[in-house]
Length: 409
Image (cartoon, rainbow, N blue to C red; front, side, top):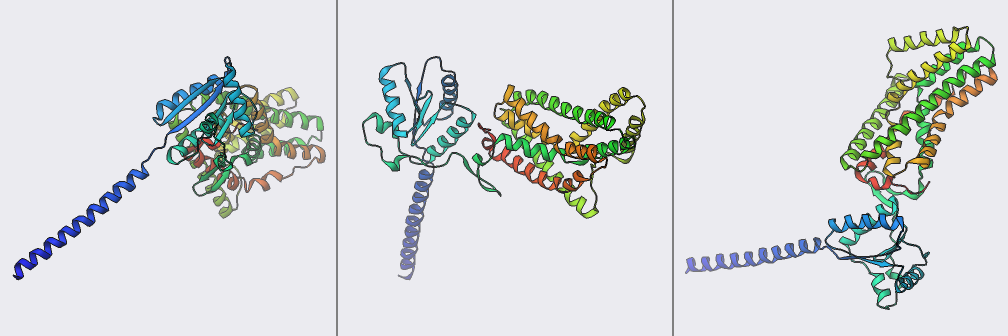
């Protein structure tokens, strides 16, 4: 009897455990299925024949529909009067301008097409694939009243970045980035110590004309060299920017450069030293000897020719010392598809602020016939600020490169 009772208890236990784990497994499967739900997305866009931006939008959507099985696209040709009426009604609902291309997806609309809008569409399509949303366009087509709660008020410009927090890209512009990166690039001391030494030697002549000529040629050559180097580089980067692997490589280089900047700052604080660590003592002595020969040249044209060559050599060295600021900025320009006049204007702005501290020191020297150590004082913290910025750009380039796609300046 006891044996039979034990068997019954064991069978009951096994049956209960089986039912428990069966129910638990089914719940897990249901939970996994719920997590794996992919919602259908209806995207509508109004186009006009001959519209360049409309053609770009179509090309983008053709790629997306190949990538996303849940994406359904409806096009309305505004050359048809009924579709034009529908566009006017839709624009009125969203309180937007009647312009093609006009795109509606869920509770959002987009006017025109650009790199920024492409990034926003990528983001909203990903979000709608994982979450329920209201199809406002479907309501408009079927004459259903659109409620205030139907509109998607989620910001297209705010991003949650690891270790950084929420970033709103509207608070940043490429113009501001050009100013910041150019200034930080310029206050690194690689070229500054050469300029200061050159001015110190020339001051002995007490000739402002000679000081203006030699210092001016040095700065002008530096600016032209940087400008030409960056404009040439952006053409190369433009060919590679759409490759994800290239973006990862650039991001990794930015992280390395940022780490090197922070290391340089910490080292300079510990050893109480400033200056560029790229040149060794021997190389620096050769530059000093070259500067002395140029300053001592009795013929001004020969001195200016020497200054021209010196500026090229020094700025090549400075590229290594800047640890990637010009390269990083041209990468961001290419990421935004900026070429031509816009890119040239932004690179000119970068170059101006690259030279700004040199121009200030040079101006003071010409007026007072004394050398000011202004740049070295500011430069003490250039590595710290530059390192932090490079780390941020590196993280964005790897984690969320779309944040670096600005379509406004």
